[in-house]
Figure 1 (spheres, rainbow, N blue to C red):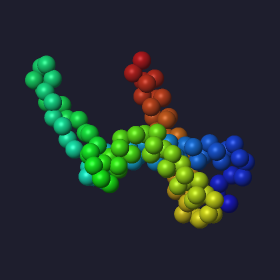
Figure 2: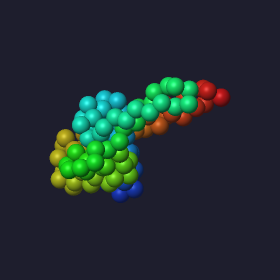
Figure 3: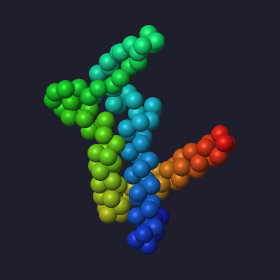
Length: 121
């Protein structure tokens, strides 16, 4: 078996995987083309005349619902967690690989943030 049977360790691994996949969906640039249909761009000028672009969820229908979901880190996190737990429960090899890969990527991202903050001091 790829994933540990120790409940606490498994909880941490799935938690890290959920964290990474949620951030990938909600924030990472690579997923921007998938998020774009659910948002409208609003341009505003600040006091200095610079244009700022804000993304607002569309207001109606399925695209509006999707935009509301995708703009909420906590909401996406619940659904991502459910998906990963179901993949684990089904004992699918691809689920194990996905969970482990995302967990390792999360640890790498956390280490990168820590090192970046230390280097800036």
